[in-house]
View 1 (cartoon, rainbow over the protein chains, first blue to last red):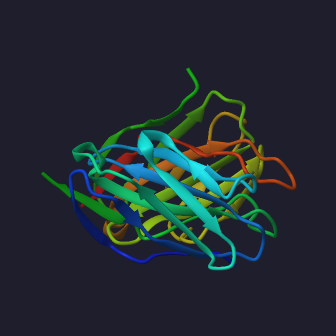
View 2: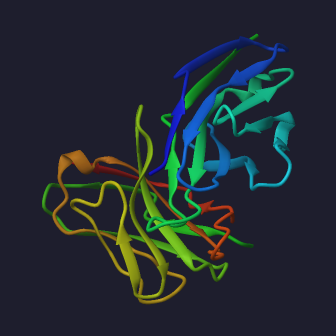
Length: 116
Length: 116
């Protein structure tokens, strides 16, 4: 079985300050991990993905995430928030084996608010 | 352009009136899946398909049916919709590599369904 926990349902930052969105996961197999972003009334956009190569993954719009196996974490960071980053963010694990091969399990989502 | 399309994008219906939401992808992907998104719950998998004529239940299959007669299409069928199926629905597709399962899932734009 696999699961994803996003530790904060809401995060609020000021423009120009760092962003940290936290994600812990559990998986019976070596997982693939993703961060997706959803802007209001929009679909899902892939930010970045971890697929067992480098543990520090760079994505679009200045975001990056670090895979830490010992902590079962995949936190999303950005050095300086921009107003356009305000959205909902989903941490996702993809099952790499077993009977649910390929299945995506989503975290509950973190709503990021950016203040001027 | 590589894409996943869904139709309709918005639908209002009444309890018990059968409906179908279509999903089509033009990337020759083996894996297709349906998710529903509800506030505070993230996205939950309804059904998935690993190839033509191969479908299986996800986490919340009750009240839904699917079929996969062609590789590109994966319609979601609600035989007798109920108000608790009011939700935002996403179709997704990806390649499926045995032993890796690391391909990115591409999402459709979403279908917003209201069941009265």
